[in-house]
Structure formats: structure tokens, C-alpha cells
Length: 567
Image 1: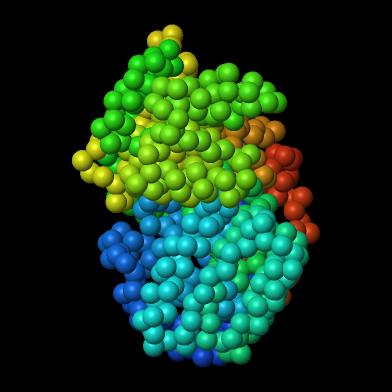
Image 2: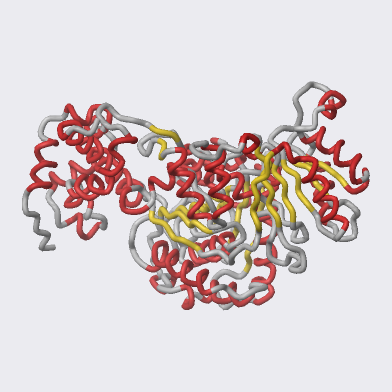
């Protein structure tokens, strides 16, 4: 595996992968930018968000002040999408739970609409669950109401929110889409939705949304994909290809996204610093369950509220049989209700009707309610904001992913929570029962959570534990070896391959704007068009990288010759 000959072939294969990634990034940013804005009014291109009348008014109307880290991130996003002619924005915004990513997506969306990116009137926000989509619609709705009341001195006079989920009937969906196609020039719309945004009919109509009179573009001004780790590769790209710019947001990106960010991937990335967390994380053997229940009773008697999370709703077909087993939502609810009192314990899960689930969540969130413990599945992972909760217990924690566990921890210790009560995150682990921790992946995963509350650190650990997936395909985690490449043995070659593999494409891929393309040869333009339309895709297939004549020689000449870059 580590012989010089094998390493040389593995390096060649990695270089081919990097050349293809460079080509794919060029296609996505420049060639496939059918929705880019072609402005006839240069005054609409504000170089900074502070110079934008609409966004400045929106920031002033927020119910809080932007933190310095949020302002820095907004400046970076603005420069990429609006402030310079740099093709389509393909960017990951990585920030911890509760750090303010949604607010930045809202402000950037206003800027893209005001500067007439794409069709210049609609921003779409994709969320993985109906709960999260509803929360986004409510949050952005409050921001928009405050902005509308402020009457900004901008071409945009009214900002409104629309919600599209699977529960919307066909007739109402048709009315909504028709309204989007007939928006007045002084309106801006944020379309928040779930997978309902990804149906073929909706995608086609969003992609062809007409532009305002001052723009020749079409489609969405911006596509925001929230909690990108919970969506598939093709799902994310469906919406992204409808828009002039794409912003992906996550606290713990999927391993494949980690592999695709930065100089060796497809996406640029921005890190949003969080506000810190005082949540104490503890790993407890599951055999100590009775002691945990007693400790929880003591805490709720002193005023605490708690989530109790399990991986399963039930094991059997009937509620009666499910409730006998305690390692599921129904069984644990029954056991805790017997211990604490029926009125103090409630439960929610994914099989419940939406109305019933929302009613139970509202009861739990009500400070005047007597419900102190909510037993649940991971349906509360995103979209739930109950500031008074300061305890979470995760049973069978070994069965959850690292990203899920970090997202769940974000449900406690949130802004506005009661500071007098300390926050505890308790992970019940059956693997910890035997006392052996070395070399056990599930415990290593839990120990990462115990040692760190930083989402980027946890995402990197998840990446190392699960593998990068397939950067040229759709596998989002795991290990995909090539014909000569073994990820276990040749991982250290990636940085060098990114440097040298991409340099072969750089002279051609540096041609990004129309004025520079005009000065190049006809042959070069034909060649790039040939590559970009995937007519030459087989020449960049990593499966056959080591069979292509000439490529290895060019790699070796670059490696061992004195290279001067006078440009």
C-alpha cells in the first residue's frame, strides 16, 4: 500500500479527482449561471451592506444588535454574492446552534433582492422538517414586520413571507406560485418550505420566475439550504440550480460537505462564531438508569424542565404492547408518568398528527403548565425553542449520530433560558456498561461531545470517524476507495494533489468573465465548452485515472521540476 509505485499511482488518481472538482466548480460558478443578474441600473449594486438602504434598515429594525462575528460574516457573504462580479456564490455558512445563521440568511436575501440577483424578487429557504420551516417563517416574519413598519428608503417597500409544506393543498400551492410569478416590483418574498419545494412542478416554476423590469435575469435571487446535513445531495442541488446564488447552512455539516469546502473542494465557507454554551455533558452507563430518574425528579421538583430523547417510538404494533417496553417513547412515558405523576409528563413523536404534536409542544413550552418532562424522538432535533428547558437525557445515545447529538444538545441552554439553573446533557450509553472505552467508536463519539461544545470541532471529528464519502458522487459519508487509491493509506496526499491537480486546469479555469473570454483563442473556448457540457466527462473519471496516457508524466514533471509562477 505504501510502496513508492503505489503512492505514485494513488497520487495520480487524487490529482485526477482534484482536476474534475476544479472543473465542476468552474461549471457551477460561471458557466451554469443562467440566473445571474444583468443589471441595467448600476446604482443597485451596493458594495457593502452598510451602503444598502434596505439592509441597513433591516439591521436597525432587528430586535437585537448583530454581534461583531455576525457583521464580519455578513460582510464576507455580501462580498461573494453582491459586492463583486465573482460568479455564483456557492458557500457554506457553518455556525453553532443558536449562533444567528437564519438572521444572516435573511439579510443576505434582502441584499440579493435589492440588487436584482436572478429574478430579483424571491428568496427560497429549504428546511428538512415542517417544524423548522414553520419556525423560520415565524422568525423571519417578525423581522419583516418590523422592517415594513420602519418604511425603508429603498425600491423595496414590502417584505412578506410565504410557507409551502406538504400539508398545503394543490389549489393553494397553485395560488401561491401564481402570486410569486406576479409580484410587483416593490415587493420581496421569502418562500420558506420543506421538501414540497423540490417537486418537479415547483422547481420548474421557481427556476423560471420572471425578473423585474430592471433585470434580464430569472429564477430565485438566493437559495438558502438550512440543516444541509439532513438533506440528500440531489435534493440540495435541485433548489440551488434555481437560484443566482446558493447558501448552505449547518452547525455540523455532513462529512462529504466538509471534504468539499475550501481549496480542495467545490464550496467556499464562512465560520460564524457562536455565543458559547455552559451545558455540562455527562456520559452515564445505562445500568444507572434508576439513579438518573431519581436525580431528574429532584431537579424538576426544584423548577427544572427536561427533554427525554429515545431512538424508537415503539417496537410492536399496538400501543399497549409498546408501553410495556421502556426503551422507547411510549414505554418511557408510561414509566416516568408513574414516577412523577401523569400531569407532569408528556410525549411527542413523528407518527402523531401535526396538530396533536404542536399542542403537546405548546403545553410543554407554557411556563404556567405543569408539564415538566417531554419524552420524544429526534423530532425535536431542530425547530424547537423552549428557553426554560435546562436538562436533556438521551437514552441509547450510542445509536445516534454525532451531528444529531450535537443538534439535540442545542435545544437546552438557549438564549433567554433561566440562568439560575445549570444545564445538564446526560448521555445514557449501554456500551459504557462494561467500562471499556478504548477503541470503541460509539464511545469515542460520545467523548467528543463531552470534551467540546464547538460545532466545527464536532463536525471535523464526525468527518474523521465516518469518512469523507464520495466527493464526485452522492455518498455523503464513509470511505470510497478508487482503483489505486486507499483512503486509509493515502489520505496525506490530498493537499499535494489539490495543489498540483488543480494547476493543470488553472490556465483555462481562470477565464471567468466575458471580457477575458473574448481575448482567448476560439480553440480554448470550444475546449472549455466541451468539458463543461460533460461531453468529455469520461476523461475525468477517477475509476480509470491511472489508465490515461500522459497525465502521470505531467504530474511528475510538475512535482520534480522547478515551477515559477510569474503571473
